[in-house]
Length: 107
Image (cartoon, rainbow, N blue to C red; front, side, top):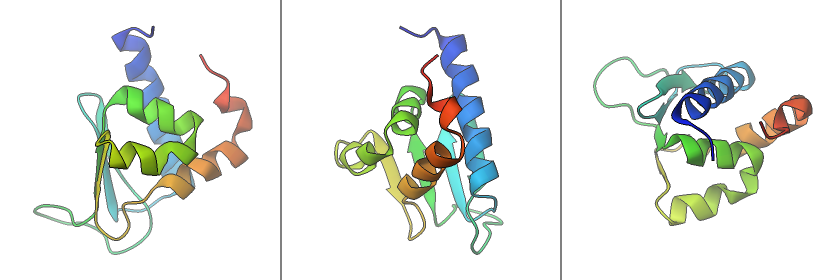
């Protein structure tokens, strides 16, 4: 089982990749208590509650990173909270796997 520091480091690596693949400020992706980023092209969020928010814990982020096909199931189970028209990030995680296949080796 990964330690909290290992999860934190892996979360930050994954979020950096998400920003590289989907730059922008239309979606706020939150992984408390580790980090939050803005990603995906579209109308940027400026103030107040963002209209497109995705939130999950670190272990769920790592899971969806390794298997983006689980996105829908994890949303149904409540492990991913995704609201707003642009909040389905499953395709972004699939793109990361295609562009950075070496990163998919489990650490």
